[in-house]
Image 1 (spheres, rainbow over the protein chains, first blue to last red):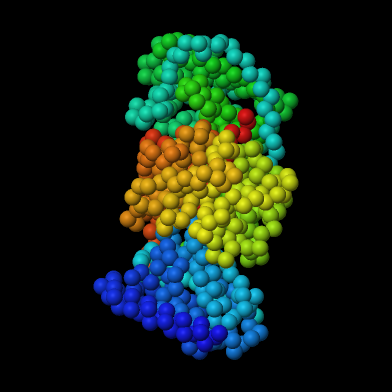
Image 2 (image 1 turned 180 degrees about the vertical axis):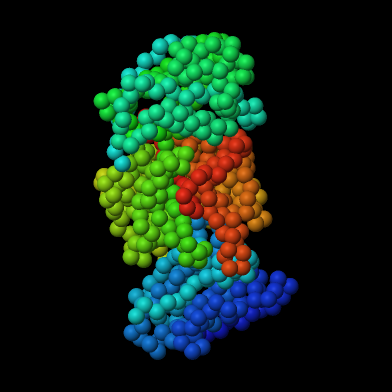
Length: 158
Length: 445
């Protein structure tokens, strides 16, 4: 069963890579690809080699290839540390209405949670909270700051 | 906050309502505001001292508020007092109309007051200078500490007489007071008079609070709080200060508003990445699910007859505005223009929906008919949202944020208002930065 899931994921990865290479004309500047942040500037680590956050495109909650890779590392880490519980915080950038952004943050956090669960992490270990646009990590009003703020962050609870 | 009891001894000395004299047309823009003279109220010399209120100045202070209210409408042009030709007490008895006409005033407000036995008695008159007639005269008695409200009530009565529409001066605005750096904002619930006076803070700022909204009687507020890091919709009684969570939801509830009868709260509940709209009856505590869709459904707002709900959904891909019957049936998308739409708010008159529109990196506040036709964008800016209606459906208050520098410097959030004609945009005075305004109904109705 686990093997099957992994196989499915490998397929997904291959598939998305194909799609991504197909649209290599998509805007790529500095640390933003499309409009998803790809840099490390704001990233913290749950443990060595385990980034705490993933980034999203504007108004989207779908996971990029890089996000899946990060989440798989988180899942591995959580499997090793069975007593550890986490909260996933979902965030949006400031370029949307407040109430919609609260919903969007919740959707993003749950996208991360769902992915961790497909890697065998119990939903009971993961709580979710949305902060909408209320807690920007970068307070600037630039496309780079917005891309860093469109994120979900996995935080240890205990 | 004590309930305000005005002992209205309202006497209409002259009822000339039958044939309209001066009329202010507020359906078009205010390119030609009506020149109006607001004479200081005459203070009766028999007036007695009262609890630190400057009685001698009271007549001037009340007329200054009336004047400020009228100027803020953009429909009136209060004239400079230096040019006034008659003493307040004499003008109040019988103005020399030709003298007032000389300074180009078309309407004159006069009045007198007396503070005695712990009571404030106020009388005022509105005169049509061209027709040389009294249009309205009213008198009332209240406690002297209510003098600001007296000024607002006078303003409302005169506004009604001159425009034929209900006023909006004796009202309050509840909002979120903001302070601190942009990425460490402290937010408190705050309430103030419509003109920015009497600011009071209702929470301490220990937890994040958002989107406060009045109930129809202005005694309750529903808002969202992150108390104990559990984002939930709360109900606050402004008089007693008691607070409670609305409903028992196993996840985030947000975007609350009252139904027009005040009996229900409509809000969003988010679970497993999906937000839907629910109502809770405040008496029976019965919770009803109104939408059931895998998209984000939020920002619900009842029509004033309670039969419909406008809301925000991204079921078509991006945020758009939809209208449905209040039981959730008959969902219909009403926005199809270029751009994305949020925060629909039904006008108290029922004929319009105010909204936020986002297009090409710019934010607009606009109004449209309830079927989505007749869209009019009133104001464009870097960031603005969350319109709330004045109780007469003439003015919108909203908040606007500025662009921040690389460290978040230069960021501010302020309240602004604009007429639905698109004229008369102004910033509201608040002690701190401010967002998420909600306008009360008339307090003394």
